[in-house]
Image (cartoon, rainbow, N blue to C red; front, side):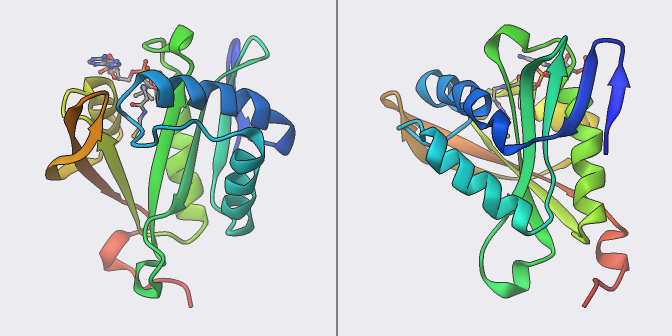
Length: 180
Ligand SMILES: CC(C)(COP(=O)(O)OP(=O)(O)OC[C@H]1O[C@@H](n2cnc3c(N)ncnc32)[C@H](O)[C@@H]1OP(=O)(O)O)[C@@H](O)C(=O)NCCC(=O)NCCS
């Protein structure tokens, strides 16, 4: 699950990466509408989330540009009730300094492959803000289809915020019987 593009390396995240991941996420929580969190989680909470994802063998990846973690992506449980167990929700966050430079596009194929390898069948993107053109385009580019819009389900920075729902089947999707 690792690929190299000159100076860009996609690799699994390790616990030692969490401080940098926390810092990237913190900025998006504080200044962006992609995340509906309003208080940035600390390293301990981000490590707890990382551990729970890895315990399920779901992918948690970082993109290193010249040795610096420029972005990260993971897949987590979509909803906890058991019938949802073959469905995951993805998240991709790129450091503000690196957005629009192909980092998200480099992470996405490995993330999708990791979900399929973990036996999952559907990936859902719950995209904060209808105007999040970067995330919508990134997901379209990798075969996600827009399947819904939840208008005004968030309230952040003094305004109502939509969720855009996008979805991609992996591992044969509904045509394949899932693993036991
Ligand atoms: C969304 C995000 C992960 C995309 O990562 P990225 O590294 O900036 O994306 P890329 O540079 O690989 O670009 C992916 C595609 O989106 C397009 N794109 C990127 N930013 C865009 C923008 N602001 N508006 C329109 N299109 C945009 C690119 O042109 C590219 O499409 P193309 O290959 O057809 O030209 C990143 O911008 C980010 O972290 N945004 C804030 C957090 C967020 O929204 N995360 C997603 C949560 S679901």
